[in-house]
Amino acid sequence: MKKTLLLVVFLFAALSLFAEQSPSGREIMQMTEDAQHSDSSATDMNMILIDSNGRTSIRRLQTLIIDEDGLSRSLTVFKAPASVENTRFLTIENRGRGDDQWIYLPTIRKMRRIASGEKSGSFMGSDFSYSDMESRDIDEYTHTLLREEPVGNQLCWVVESVPLHGTDPGDYSRLVSYVSRDIHVPVRVEYYEDGSSQPAKIMESSDFREISGIWTPFKITMTTVQSGHRTVMEMNQIKMNIPINPGYFTTNFLQTGRLR
Image (cartoon, rainbow, N blue to C red):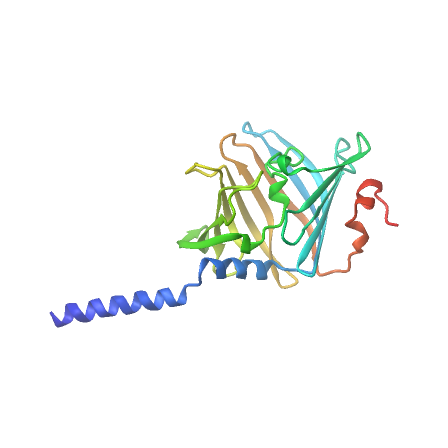
């Protein structure tokens, strides 16, 4: 009887210690944000579109990002093929409201703003939506640590994130992120829509390399579960914390392709 009591006490003590050592869902997502933060980045990459039959098309693009006062701005310029060359996409994060987004289409020589009702639409035929291209404020979600689970060779915290104020147009009812305990970067994210127990999309990150002290995936795959269509982002080169002219992040540059 004494041995049984001692075993029960030991198990409760061990469980209490585990609970004390496990960070909260909110703390995990903050660690993720901190681990991925840089003041600026410049990326050259290939976007590979793969349909359910395995047919592929490849696009090359470059992305610039800067962070000032905790708000990010990003510019994406398509370089090839000729059918999308010089298409430019600008996102500006705002405090307390959604991001502003514009796209310039060289075929019609016009820039247009992406309306909130359009944000669930496909970004340039990919499996990423305009909403996926936005920044996400971790304080706009409640984060719950569900469990720990291995993904490949990474032991991960599994965190469910639910929007605090309901679902905005183009957004998801919840996200489930598998965050590496070692490098504090998501290796898998599941995107759920209202009323569904199965993810609408799954994003998987791999080939992590340390760039200027920041663990960065050199391959990101977004899969639309129902159709089986995939978009693979393969990084050719990434530079972090480099000087970038803020003039790139303006509607003037978006429309003209020239700095003032």
